Image (cartoon, rainbow, N blue to C red; front, top):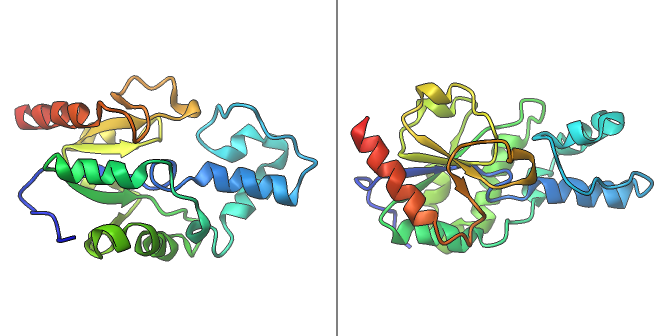
Length: 198
């Protein structure tokens, strides 16, 4: 597939929890390596380690391992969702934070995109990806992100659209209920209108 036309509005898309299933990988590893630790029925904190305070260090160590980010399963419907953004005449662009304690996270996130998205949509997905802690510095009409509170979001040009997860239910941002949510393009259109009026 060819590179999307740059003049169309940009939609920034987070990776962990939105495209790549960070939680599922942690919980699978926890069950495999430490079956004596009961799995919490419903996640209530953004950081998985906060749901397991007695085992927080162990869980953080898992996400700091080499190969962790390359091994994340893809979120259900993610490829179809990315395609729907393109078909809606928007330009999706990865905007994901590295984990500062994992020196492999940036390279592995790009490697994950090479494996999962580039074969379907082209290498432009990797070439245009943004891996940064400062998401507010990048242009777009919207940022699809599962984090309930985004640093400096009030200074950002985009509208935060929350990607629905059990731990972000208190957020009052516009909400996308997974990649199969039929309201995806309506949410993006509303963000586009908001952007044109600001």
